[in-house]
Length: 113
Length: 116
Figure 1: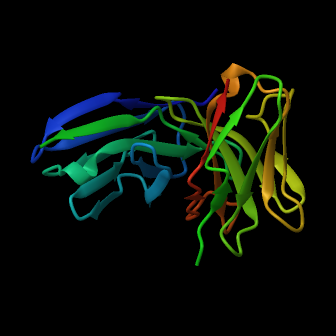
Figure 2 (figure 1 turned 45 degrees about the horizontal axis):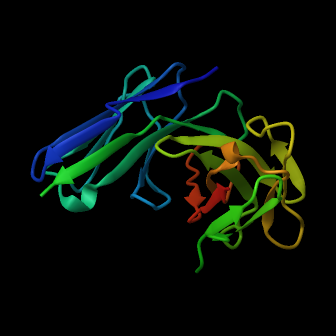
């Protein structure tokens, strides 16, 4: 079945360093979403990318959707302690007209002050 | 403007008991989704419901698990005869539309079920 994988699984960075997580789908996606989950918290929607090659920025966060629409990345510039959490990408399943997102395995980010 | 409300936040059940998890979606949202998250893992889709209808339950175990979203009241995820392996965080999400394009899902705080 459809799979969405993320690498790395864990990342520890010093505060101020950059961070990137990569998301790869086994199938072409119509769109991809990114969520952040703080420790002990719930997933919070960050952004959705729809177009091939699309790049979107939110302050220090840069999201990219691959040309083939099978991969995506999230890059954080100059990490802060508030960036700590697990970042998930999610892609819709192949069934059209229904909302069923397959979540990636997540990348857990730890920022060392 | 309340978001998705789940209760209880924490639930402890002995093996063999029943667990009932409740979810009230964002006001005006008629699409509800339940996900399960095991410790240190991602979210696994369980079921998608609209008012009074189960649209997709392909991620839900065939036995002991059931879900409903009645015309009035919250959505309920019911787990009968719980086992230790059911211990997990159960998240409910709601959305305004059913299509996958430009549809943001709002997640509740989750119910953390512990089976002892």
